[in-house]
Every structure is written in structure tokens, then in C-alpha cells.
Image: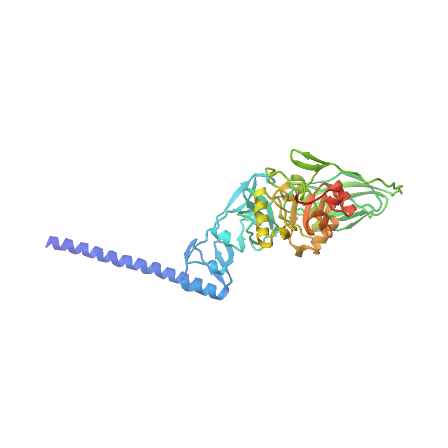
Length: 454
């Protein structure tokens, strides 16, 4: 009898355990069904796939509905939204965005704190992202977004507005990761005194510290009516003394420039003979005076690698960017420094699409691209649709004031070897930029050099 009772206890335990397993399975199945029903409902009603789980299994019914009816689907998860192509949704999805707070101490950054988004499958497929920011970022009301590729940081989106704790931005296949930060302005530096003449446009040689500060918006105010201020353009109107105050309201930073305005005297202009410029090879680099020459005739060595846009380029760009903002023009760098290997991939891709003859009119062969010099960048939209826009016309009229030239001007294709690119700015310094721009010539015409592949 005792043995029988013992055997019955084991049977009962096993029986109860089986029932418990079935109940747990049914509960899990029920929870999964509820989750998937809510997912299907949200997809059908709003094209939004809502979940609070990082790893998610999705009903085949939901996947089929998305494939048949939805071009783009939004994933809502853990304080962010990710827009994807509808055909990306699979049975199993890992929604982890790999975002974390870190400090970056590299190039333009000085141990800068920010939110880092690391590359993974979901980010690779994302069309756009809406992201909830931590308080230390959102309190500034605006942030910059840097794209990261092979350890290099490039400003991707400038002064993105924080709306109800969130920012939204389109992703780019160009970058692996993203760094979101706010860089505070420390000071505005200018010339302290200036002597100009009536009718002169005034250049205060504006510099920001740090040069990549997020908010560099400024206002100009004169102590009297001797200056005419229209956006970024300041002109001396009358003879006398004045003080120009330059202020950044966001950071409550300002500086004063004392300006003496004199009456302009007529000067006798003597005709000068055209100067002959000599091109010199220095360690495989071609120079005319202090200008690095890069075109179809004069290449860069394959191992030449500055790694990023030069400090001179970035300082000048940020100065220009702040002035453009006064005129209602938003400028950003869309494509800056490129390595030799990157140019190989870009050029070969264009050749595959259009053939070499056509590609050579708008893309440089590896070693012949100014992008590899760290002294050239494409601004805003590097496409023919940018030609004639307000931003393009502003650059054409004003970029020389900051040391830039539109490197491939309109109607100069026979000299430069490239079609008109209103977006491609080359840094040559203020003195050379003024001379070349006022001449109405391309670099090749001005220095009497060729641009032809051998």
C-alpha cells in the first residue's frame, strides 16, 4: 500500500506539472496574441507598428498586410520612431537602436557630450528617425547631428529643432553612425578697430570659438546712423566714428568694433601687365604661390590624406554660415573630405551608370578630386537642381568674402573640364578669392593652366 501511494504521488506531480506547462504556454500564447492583435490593429489604422519589446515576432498576417498595402511603415519603440520600407518587415525583428550617451574628444570636439547612435541592421534600413532626447540635450531647444564614417565626424544636420522632447531627421546611406550634440558658443572674435571709406562694405573678420558652435546666430547694431546694415551686409554711409556691436543672444555673448569712416579719395588707376604665374611641384603637390592646384592636369599623390576638411575651411565656412543666416539662407556641408578609396568607389559608380566620357564631365577620377585635398566641399544639395536657388545665388554673390570660390563657374566648362557646379566651394583665402571672383575667370583661366587628363 505504501508503494502504491508513493507511485500515485509521482503521477499526480507529473500531471500537475503538465497542466502548469500547458497553462504557461497558453498564457504566453495569449499575451503574444494580444500583442500581435494590437500591432495589427495599429498598422491597419495608422501605418504604425507599436511595441515595447526589443525582440519581436510578428504575425504572418501582419507582414502580408504590410507587403500588400503599405509602402513605408513606422516602428514606435522605446522613445523613438523609425520609418522603414514596408518590405523590410520580417517575422522576427530586433528593434534595438544602440543609443547611448558618450563624450567625444576629436577634431572639432573638446570632450563633447552627446547622444551616439551606433550602426546596426535597423539603422541601416531606416529612412528617417524620430528620437526622444535626454534633458541635457533637449534643454538647448536645438542640436547638431554629425554623421560618422570610418571614425570621421561630419556635420550632417545643423540646428535641428527640438519639438516636444523629440527631434526628427532623415538618415543617409553615407554614414554608419550618428552623434547628436549641442556645442555652446564661448566667444565671438573680430578686429577691434577698423578704418574704412564711405561706400565700403565692411569686413570685421568674424571668428567663433569654438568654430563649430551650434548656435552662431548674430545681430549687428551700430551706435549711430553712419552704417547701413542689411542682413549680413554692412556698408559705411557717412564720415565719422561709430561702434558696431555684434551679439549672439542665445549665449548672451557680444563684442564691439570701433570703426573710423573716412571720405574716399579718387585714385589714379594705372594699367598693369598680366602676371605670369609659375606652377611648382612640392613633394608631389602642385602649387601656384600658396594655392594648391588640383584638377585633371595636376593630381594629388595617391597617399595624400589630410583626413578631413582643413581648419581654415571650417572656420571660414562657419563665418559664412552665420552671415548667410542673417539673410535668411541656411547653409550646410553635404559632402566634404573624401579619401582616395572613396573617390575610387564614387567615380567607378558613375562610370558604370553613364560611361566614362559623361562621368568625366561631372566626377573626378581618383587623385584628381579637390575633395581629397580637404579644401573643397559640396554645399547643401550637390545636384543641378541647386543651380539658381536662393542659396546658390547667395553663394555666387558672397562666398568670396569668406575665402571661397565657386570652383566650376557657369560657362567655363572648356577651361575647368567640368559642368557648372554652384554647390562646389573651394577655399583659397580671402585675398585670392576676391581677385579670382572679380576677374570673372575660372582658376584655369586666371592662372593660365590646363585641366585635361593625359
